[in-house]
Amino acid sequence: MNLLLLFSLTLGFKAEALANTQLEVQILTPTQVYSEIQKRNVAVFDVNPEAIYKKGHVPKSKNISFSSIENHLPKSKSARLIFYCMNEMCSASHQAAETAIKAGYKNVARMPAGIAGWLKQKLPTETIQ
Image (cartoon, rainbow, N blue to C red; front, top):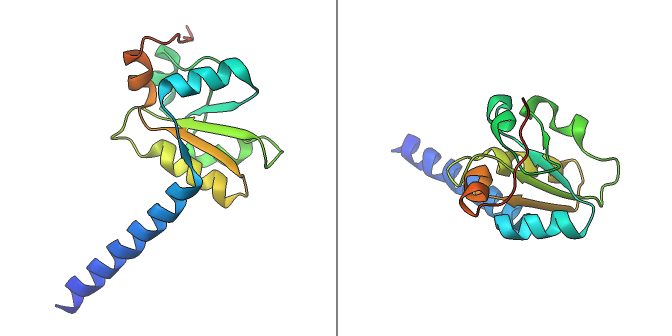
């Protein structure tokens, strides 16, 4: 019984932490991300494996891995950052956005639809041969 209570409390704290982080991260659709790329200077980060990135990624996005996220972020803590991964089932963009927030960045967004949602909307992509 105590183990069950501890497990429930742990899940509760994790859910609360996730909710608090989501309040700081703006959620964008693929169309909104495309519009932001067209209108202003944004740093877009693809948190997918390199093989997926090479096959097709959001134009001007930079492929990063979890182990080096902070090394690739701009110096300005007020820079507009957008993260995405594969799709709604993937948590990599959320984790990357959370890392940026913990590092002090204030203007962080993510695109939960990921590259799958981007392709579904028939938005342009870049590839690497």
